Amino acid sequence: MNQQQLALKVREHVIRMAGGGGCFLGASLSCTDLIVHLYTSVLRVTPATKDDPNRDYLMLSKGHDVPALYGTLAELGWFPTSRLARHLDPDDTLYWHPNRNVPGVEFHSGSLGHLLSVAAGVAYDMKRAGTNNRVFVILGDGECDEGSVWEACLVAAAKKLDNLVAIVDRNHFQANLATEELIPLEPMGPKFEAFGWRQARVNGHDYTQLAKAFEKLPYETGKPTVVIADTVRNKGLPSLEGKAERWFVKLTPAEIEQCLAELHGAASAGLTSEPLVVR
Image (cartoon, rainbow, N blue to C red):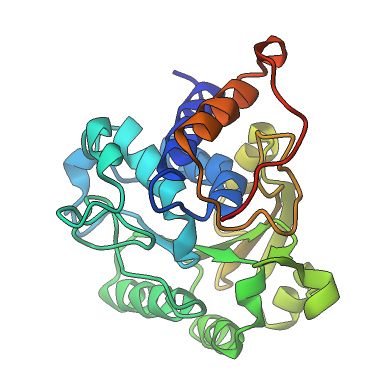
């Protein structure tokens, strides 16, 4: 299964997890390609090495994107895909934010702005121990309004944490508002550079660009790295792509089937062009 095929399977899982109690569909679909690429081509960790102290770490700071992480981990054998049907089941631990009881989840997240600091601490510990591990953390762009993100950036640069890599899922929305209409973030790359990081900006849905961005890390010895990945909210569902209000979505069984058909480009399936209603 290549990356595009895997990402399609993951998006199917995300859509199904939008049933029942719903999920943060838009942000999960925007970061699917990022998570798929990291786990298949970048991270030095597998289900067999998940407890190896020398593994790479991935921390999902924008925790509401966890359906994409769940789907990727399940497809790669970290736990059975059948378990995804128990999303939000009170007898399971698959819910709206990451939980360390789920295999592959390194740290709890939910409140935004925390995990870059956690990742920096882990990366610093690795530096002191002299190991070759790397720590990757996925941030939301709206999350970068948090002062704690920039405090962590300062510390990471001061401690020369070139084993730390941040990935910003730049889908240009914060909840139900465009970031640049709320608190503008641009120019994002130069801001990270000013804080002592080295940066690249790529199309977060283009696997060729992603491969180039991660082929040689760090970008500079002694400097932390950030990859700013421009993405599309609700990527894969044209009727919902780039919709400011399509943030948290709860789908009926019929709407799930409609979205799955749209995901597969089933134009002949009698799809309506009307956007789905957010509940």
